[in-house]
Each structure stands twice: as C-alpha cells, then as structure tokens.
Image (cartoon, rainbow, N blue to C red; front, side, top):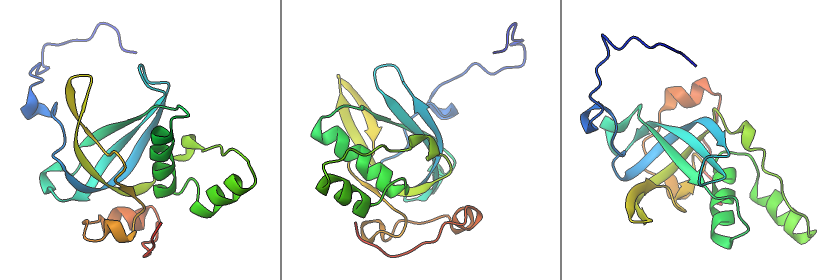
Length: 167
C-alpha cells in the first residue's frame, strides 16, 4: 500500500465519463483477469475484461461478477455454468461425480487468463440496478455464443482453440 499520496496532478473527477459506469447490456467475449476470494457480502467474484462484443466502445472495460457460494440450486448452477465456460470442469466430470454421489471441487484459483462468452443484462438486487451475467455464460465456440464477436488475437495468444460445441 502506498502512503502519503501526492494528489497535485491527479484528476479527482470520478464521474461516469471517467469509467465509473456499467458496461452496456449486450453479448461479449470476456477474459478472466482475476479470481477474488471472500468478497464482502459474497463468497467470491471474478474480474473480467471485455475483449470484443456487441458494443465496441466497451472493449477493455472490466466487470466484476459476484457469486454466492451456497448450496442454493440457483447459485450452484451459476457457478457450474461459469466453471464449464472457462474450462475448470466438464459436463461429463459433473455427471460422473453426481452418478457416484460425489461432490466437486472447482479450482477457482485457475480461472485467471481463461476466456468465455456471456450476456450482460440489468438485474435489480436490494434496490440497486447492476449489470450481471446471470445464467447467460457460455464457452467460446458454444452454439449459444454464435454471433458474438471474438478477439481472435487474444484467443491465439492464450492458445485457446475455438471449437463448436453444445453444453
């Protein structure tokens, strides 16, 4: 942490035009920048960067997606959709674990640097409207992600292959 910050040359205008606004609703190619464990009011979050999508002006902007780590069916489903989309687990691995009565540990710490597609939309929670991926999360190349622009250079750099699949 830095102490004694010199603010003489710092623009302290943090209004919407300076980046403190939500990313526009739309479908995007995202890159996971960071896994954030134990976020206040939530159990984890992923910081993701827009690589390409339905609004070019959003490229390079970041979004933080929050996940409550509970046994609630809906929160578990969102976690699994994200884990599948970024390749931390496969549908077959989940089906095998379920058939064997086993639980699954998701290695969220390995999320950084992985790509996925998703649709951001407005969601009201506790009286505030925020952008959220909800259940619209897909692996790169998934049939439901068809038509979402991709940043091919970023995918090539990460050596991630684009394949057609349906989960």
